[in-house]
Image (cartoon, one colour):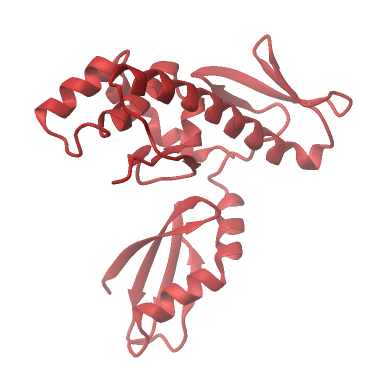
Length: 231
């Protein structure tokens, strides 16, 4: 039973979708992958790829809820430790507090407990946007280039990308990584505004724009996947 892998986007998040054709299947069957990293659709021999993709689209909310509630995920909650700019912080819910505030190794989240996970995520995304926009402005100025639209997503296949028209996409989860890692990813994508390949000239430019390209590569290889388990 061979499986074909596709990537679909749900609420700005890239989700891996495995489509398996089975001779005994009578209906399309959708489930969350055992790893909690994506979804699996088993289809009858007579069904088409279009049928499977339509099912995934129609059930996108169900898929997202299944991924977020998977036992392997670390849902943001009171007392949970998460990395912020590479430094461990403990989430503290204080219903009487206003907004969100990091202080002394803690992230104080105001409001009702049932809103904590969403407010934590929104705050991380906001900080990622501020930091990434600043770094893009800084690095594009160094090479006398302008970027297109800057978009934050919850991507799993890549940390960033540069489109043919100069639009830049980044994973908001990079705000949890050490600062030199986020700096490198921005440098990498900004370098693509000059070189649309991975030639020697590209790598030289990317390294000149980054604080620590080698260290960032090492951290991403060793710890990058852990960022996807949060939230």
